Amino acid sequence: MSRSIEEIRNGHRHGPVTSFVNQHNVEQLNPFVLWDHFHAEGLTGTTGFGFHGHSGVATISYPVIGDIVHEDTDGNKGTLKAGGVQLMAAGAGVLHKETVYPHQGATDAFQLWTLLPKDEAEMGPVTYSLAQQEHTPLVTTEDSETKILVGSHDGTSSPAKHSVAITYLDVRIRPNGRWHHGVASGQSNGFVYVREGEVTVAETRLDAMKLGVLDRSDSDLSLTAGESGAVIMVALGQPLDQPIISSGPSIHSNPERLRIGTHNIARLSGSLRSRSTTH
Image 1 (spheres, helix red, strand yellow):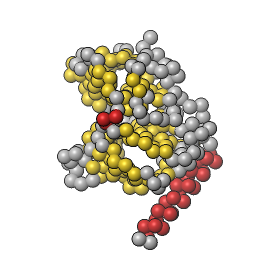
Image 2 (tube, one colour):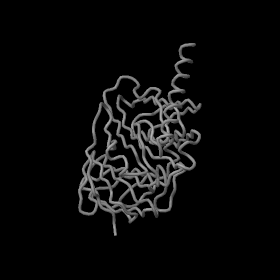
Image 3 (tube, rainbow, N blue to C red):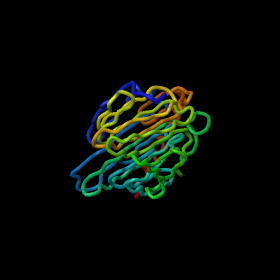
């Protein structure tokens, strides 16, 4: 039996960002608690987000046009080239800064957040890693090309490691082509996002810039592209058995941990301001 779509989301656009998860539906896709599409054209310089804080979550950045330069208060720095993937687990609290360098005035990028497991990573240390495009595996069939950002597909695994059991894929499907993914046991929550073209999942058509929430099951996922083909993103994950308490930038499993995470972010912000005024 194959998966089906139980809800289609159009997203909420604010500036160059379209968001598909909000406070009202944040529990539905556990362990995924944010999915943002960042798209802008006609830029004449860099763009992005200055220092801001998170705790209790992992952020997964994936630029498809333009590069992202990362810096955080734990001392991590790196340049993520277009087509690569970056993971940062915020643990008990971190500030980070993402500067986007457009390509020919345009940028197109995605950010996915997951919860962190309450017993080890939620209040743990900050971790940071990236895998450039040349290190992300590509599985090719007659009908499709599947880039494995995190997790595994058809026996091939990404070098990017995460403390949560997820699969995160970028898939290009030829016109009228079929694509199939054997879902890992327990990865019962997830979604399909159409970047270009259209796909049909079971009997539901999903058009460009739409997110389809999958039914809760770890059955395999099969879909068919339309006459112009399709480019899709797929995220599948094993839900974490813990409460979800969100302040927006921080998400924790109980109020006390949220208080500590928020306090840590405020402390780091104060230290950053102090350093900037003394230089």
